[in-house]
Structure formats: C-alpha cells, structure tokens
Length: 248
Image (cartoon, rainbow, N blue to C red; front, side, top):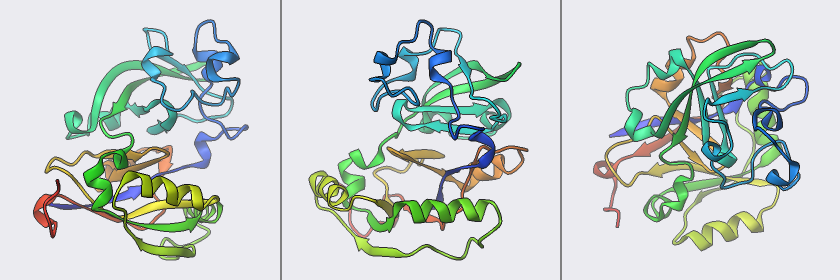
C-alpha cells in the first residue's frame, strides 16, 4: 500500500495577536515558569501533556485565537481535535495512544475537543523507517514562508521553494542527527518514507512536523477553521509490500 501524506502548517487564524496559540501558564494550576525552564510558550521537549493539565482537561488559548479543527503541540505530543473531525477518523488505534475528552476555551466560549497523543510522534527514531527513507534540505524560513503564502493564496501550490540538496539517505540515526547539526537554518525533510509495517496511521510526526493523510485533510476541509493547512507537495509513504528490500 502507498499513500500520500502532507506536511502541516499553522493557519493565521490559530496564531492570534501574539503568534502563539495555547496559553499553558493559564491552563496549568499553580503554574510556575520554572516548570517550563522559564520558556513559557510551550512545554519542554519530551514532556507529556497528561502530566501537566488538570484531570478535566481544560486548555486555554491566547487572545484572538479562533476555534480550530486540528492543532499539534510537538513538545508534549498533544493533538487537539474538534469532535467533528475526530469522529471521522478511521484508524484511531493506529494513530493515537491516548484519546480523552476535554474542552478548549476561546475567550468566553468553551468547546468540546478530543485530547490525543500520537503513536508516532518522532517517526525517524524508528531505525528501520529512517534508514529506508529519503530526505531533502531546504532553507527553513524560506520554506515555511512559502507555505504561509500558499495558504493565503499569494503563491500557487505548484511552486516550490529552493531545495539545497535532495536524495539524502542515512545508514544510522547518528548520521541523521549530524546532518541536522551541520546545516543550521535548514530543515531536513522527508521526500519518501518507507514504513515498517502495513498499518499506516492517519497522522504521524517527525518531532517538530506533523503529517496528515488525504482522508484527514478531506475531513479538515469541511471545517470553517481547520487550524492547519497543507501547502506543500505530497510525500509518498510506502508499506513493506512496495519496498525494494525488507525492513530489518
């Protein structure tokens, strides 16, 4: 099986006045800046949102953030899904490890959401996936500025920002990390992903970046404010039967 996946990009509507979506200090009872190492925009990398939010799962947003259908907070593996989108998911178990009902507050209005954790929040930590996939390097700010302009209708999707290097492969995770360190200001992004099993999720992340399949994007397209757009070329994700060699 082969499916197309698309890299997500935040829409203007979720960035509010401050360019930040979620208000973590207001959402966590007894919050102190030291809990987030004094950087209060998002939780520290590798944290778990379930250990931060109160049991009733109530999340506050920043001023002027509009209700969204999908949001991803990469540092604590939190996916927020509007009820209507969650109900359209086909592969809950292959996509999420956790699904809990809660509310997200926008100004004086609280709306129902499903708070989820991805099965694959950092897919290239999976050695077999990493070593059988291909990557490219693009200048980070230019690549994402292009995505913003596509979402605004200022650039057509078919145009692509400059790629500095393509067809990159790795033999181990250390090579992957070294390539990232050697290219500061660049994004190392997949062009082809060769999966390790036959059950593809509908969403997966590569740490910072969230990817969605066409079914998910179709569900989001029915929402007034999707929260995330997908303004980049598709990447191909192949399961073992399409692979030229078996994964170890």
